[in-house]
View 1 (cartoon, helix red, strand yellow):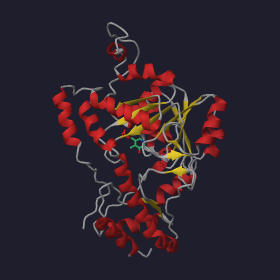
View 2 (cartoon, protein in one colour; view 1 turned 45 degrees about the horizontal axis):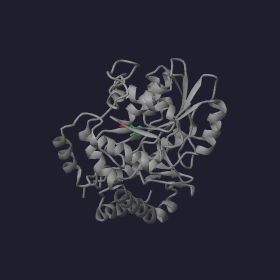
View 3 (cartoon, protein in one colour; view 1 turned 90 degrees about the vertical axis):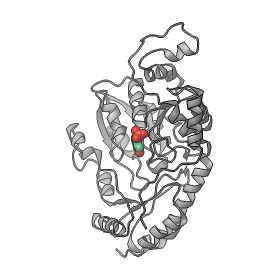
View 4 (cartoon, helix red, strand yellow; view 1 turned 45 degrees about the vertical axis):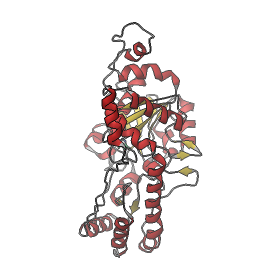
Length: 376
Ligand SMILES: *Cc1c(COP(=O)(O)O)cnc(C)c1O
């Protein structure tokens, strides 16, 4: 049997909705399906405004523009994340300051934040790793006391919660990804969640090439013109139609993912314990959206051995992230090995198991059987 690491799930109604978008005649951005996605997400999250974007990367770039990040500003990001979390701010000239992670949830270690803040710190960007919430109470308290903005990179965490409140609603801005590797997707896509209403008007302008086109369409101005910097960050309504099909059946998708996550957890518990392998930690005050399942192996050598063991049986398990602070770009911004010891250690030992919404029971049982055959 061949088991891929990820297989984009189709709910069945995508093509029908795309056909409807096409026959409606509005296939550029902000058509009917984009508006449906906006209201569904704003309502589910109780957020004042949600704007679809062409990717989470672009939503992060919008956040950096909205915060007026300038050359020399500092932005605190975890080292253990995808490159876009930091690149969006570096594009504006910011210097990244890398924060190590907690060994349990692998989230930004809030206890280290205070020592990283300087007079130039403009933003803190927590990433809810695997959709398990960062310690937002402490992060927000520290940020507020210093007047620093918080932008959540919630690429993994849509519909997850921290102390009952949806992830993506804590920072003044938050970003989502609808890339095909995420829980809900349209191939490539994203969203900016605006929690501080002061950003709404300018966000619409930045997303529309720096024009006041949105105000024009609402009849607030009689012509639209160039009023600010901006770019083209809005996706075609064809993509929004695809995405709406997925978001509409969010409970079905989350239910399927939950079953897969729980089956891994139950079936691998004893095996992991016997071999000194750690399964994901989800604190009781966090509701996770079942984005991924990973193993923390005892060493790099054992991680590589299990990966090879699975590969020989047709199963693709992968690792991530290479610590950003010791990447070529990270070093150029002044970071060095040893700055984030937990990240460096975890990055060597983490292994992600195949996990996708349509994974059949038979496929998962095969993966589990092969894992249980591995004796270390
Ligand atoms: C996937 C991902 C992104 C980027 O998402 P795109 O939609 O592909 O731009 C950013 N941050 C994190 C943590 C991610 O996992």
